[in-house]
Amino acid sequence: MTTSERIQQELQDSKGEYKEAKENLKGEQQRLDEVKNNLRKLKSQIRSEKDEEKKKKLEGDIEDMEEVRDELEKKNEELRKDLNDIREKVMKFRDALLVDFGEGKGKKRSASDEDLTEERSHFFKKIQHFYPPPPELADTRRFKDYQDEKDPFILNYRPSYAAGLPVTLCSDILAKFQDDAKGNIELNKDDIIFVRDLSNKMCSFFSDENTRRNCFLELMGSYLNRVFDIYNFGNNRTTNGSIMFTKGNFQVPLLSLEVKLEIGMGSGCAYVQSTAYYVEFIKKFRNSPAISQSRFPVFLVYLAGPYMGVAGAVFLENPVCEPLTPVMPLFYLPHHEDILLGTAYVVKALKIALTNLEKFYDQLSQHSQIITEDRKSLCFQAIMEYNGGLSSQHVIIKFAKRYSEACHKECQTLGIAPKLFFCEQIAGGWYVVIMEQLMEHDYYFILIRTKIALYMRLSNILISPDDSIKIIDFDWSGKVGEVVYPPLLNQEIDVWYPDVKAGEKILPEHDLYILNTEFKKCEL
Image 1 (tube, helix red, strand yellow):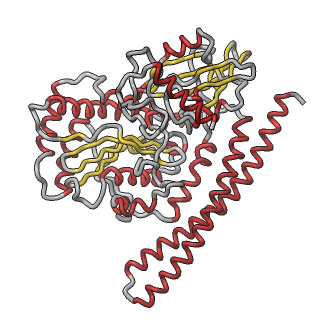
Image 2 (spheres, one colour):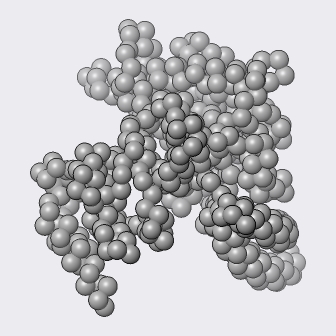
Image 3 (cartoon, helix red, strand yellow):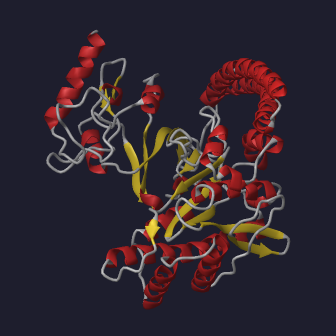
């Protein structure tokens, strides 16, 4: 048996093992979902029960059911760990990505309907059992019950552990919007006049939420040259306004709006409610190509009084939503030109993005093109093919918000860094970096995935069996005297040079101090 045949056989065996483990987890997850659903009903019932004797009995039932829930959660966690171990074994034998540089262009392997549906099945199952209307979830005291730390309902960064892959890496349209909103487009007098009028109206006092909403829809609809529909899902589920793309039987949202009368008024968080309505659209269009054959990118606009924000949403294994702009004050402040211009860039960028998103869904409706597969990591293994597929190279592909190509190449010249094949900035402010995978280092992926710092750490230095040294991770490298510590420097890590602060220059003695500190820890 050749090496290729052996690997293929091991892959098939591992896939069978994975399928069996997944079915076991699926059954136990069903039991857990049913228990959680019954537990919610009991807790809702006890809140309205006035008879003390019945209340006491309900308390006992809740206590018993909570014990069952805890046992099932523990069992599910063990099964999930086993499943992850098997998945790692499968991934070891499977090419995660094919990148063809024969013509100088990268091409990703496409994901099938089966891939996307299978990944999302757990989420669809979750919303099938119990899901309150978005206005209730807008009350964060209620919403937090659904944001389980191990399995959050929506990855919308409320709270911080409910985080997903950056949406700007999942949609070029969302990424371009974010770039444009930072001022990478030209404004004209119509853009300025609109923002001036919008701010002048939105900082006024309104008697109720609907009046504010209608005023906003009239102004924004006219500027965007779009019609806002009050989309009704039924059963107390209605958006404050949605821009829909419709072509024949194909329909999909481009933008969803949520409005609150003022900050602190209107029963909850406008942003959270907008993300909850994104889930409603997922349920509504579950069988549409927009869901089954794309990541379902949508813009979310939330308005609380005269404060507006724009978020982006995509559907991976779970819904992922994140703010793409700061919350902007819609006040008429002619003496604060930067605020007015900042808002103008955002609305102009949104106008451009909606046209791009409409084209995207129009193409999808015509050709039902399958969008390339979703990645779940900012750093992953790949195989680069060239010479018409006759030659190949194992590589690492990573996405980073900054990267020093010059430092990497300098270290490569000195023979102390992996070969750098590609480094280029893409939309959304990301760098895509493709470098040689050091195959002789069995622990390479463990190090690169679990690193906890950005600078010269032991986890960024690899040693091969012949004692050659390679340095990886040049995200925050640069020339001495120019490169500085990041704004969000984690001061809790106990390896930093004494008294370093965010924004200060990184010096060679700092790297030496960090290495000496870590070597001492190894000796202990």
